[in-house]
Length: 206
Image 1: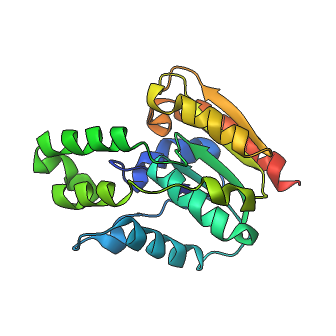
Image 2 (image 1 turned 90 degrees about the vertical axis):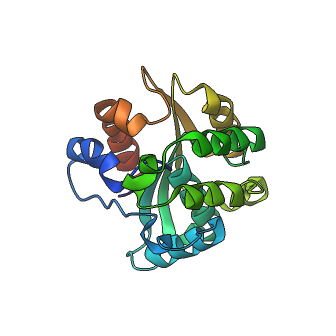
């Protein structure tokens, strides 16, 4: 199972979930390929696609937020490579107003806030700007594998998107994680691991 972190996170954001899952998990550093340059979404996705080509398929993907968007696009473009897919706090159409507010907030934060990701403030703002036109609604029909859509009950910004995504994917199921916000992997690692384990075990038998 490959666990993909969100923007503002690092691979070890999944450590508690991975411990509770047991077994073999992969936690790639999504930003490593674009460090040292003004990485755009196109470059980030290209690097992620190359990473996926190193994995034996079909494989299981789980992504949160930005990681979920990467997983969603990759599965839509390479449905034969993904056996099952879990999406946490993931949008299939980028909310332009929310991204604009996010970029404005980033500008107010000190540079050291972005150091754990290994990106500069400008890199993060540029990456966010390059995502504004993303819209995967026309590609969802290509996804044929089992899909689990998850959202923290306190993640107000993504609850509607979770419902819409589940409606667009007839093979998807929707699960709410109690007492969790957007960063479900940090807020409720044990509960998340239990839900993921159950889903991927069931999906593996299909």
